[in-house]
Length: 186
Image (cartoon, rainbow, N blue to C red; front, side):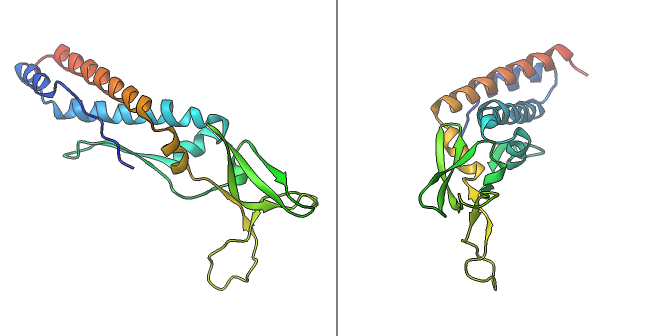
């Protein structure tokens, strides 16, 4: 999933900075990097706070920063499944005496995870028998995985998030332009 965010007034900013012999590229890269980091925190990590630990969310949402000639910053979500025990809110719905369906709590409700719980057991841990390890015996138990952070990223990315990011980027760019002009020519 790719969403583009546009910045307006780039030509006028280039002309304003040329008067004080400054470049627009470092200002643009700084604004893009700050916007990507802030958008990750405000629009993704904070809404996931009730579901996943913020440190885990930040680690799973990588920010590729603008640098050198690369003038775009990206938030790249991890598509790996999240172990159910990493979720702050998870539970199960009993189906039979030895099987229960696992669900995890997300920012917009509950989502069924891939696995099962034995409600009659002592520990009631979430397990899964779907494993693709070569040579593993059939029915080999592994920890159950819930939806990936990329799934929640896609759920949280909507028109409101894009508008917020556009507005924040424009404000950050203007703030950095004013700061560069205030520094004056070197």
